[in-house]
Image 1 (cartoon, rainbow, N blue to C red):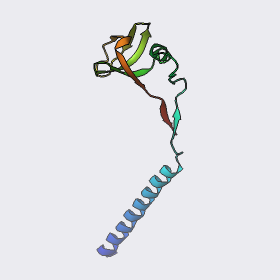
Image 2: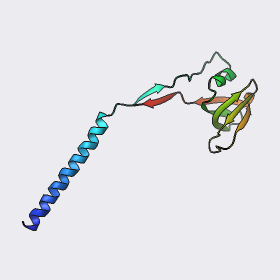
Image 3: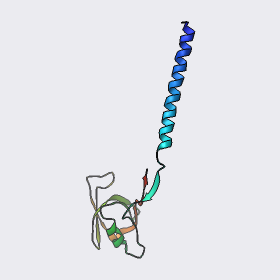
Length: 117
C-alpha cells in the first residue's frame, strides 16, 4: 500500500473516532435530566415573627449575618437565646466560633433553594 493511502486511511479512522466521541458526549449531555431549582424543605422566613424566632427555625443551618457595623459573619447556628446567638464553624475560620448579641444583627441570609437533576 502506498504511503499516501495509509495516511488517508489513518486520517479517516481518526475522524471517525473523533466523530464517535463527540456524538457520545453530546448524547450524554442531551439525555441528562434538566436541572430544576427547588425549595429546600424546612427553610422559610416569617415576617410576622421576630428576628430571634426566625433564627431559631434556622438552627443547624449555615447563615450569613450582617451586623449593624456592616461586617458579615458566616457560619452555622449552634444555639440561640433571647439575647445571644452562638455561630460555629465560621467561614474561613473553621476552628472558631462566635457569640453575637442579637440586637447587633441587621440582616440574615441563608440558602432557600437548591438545584435538583
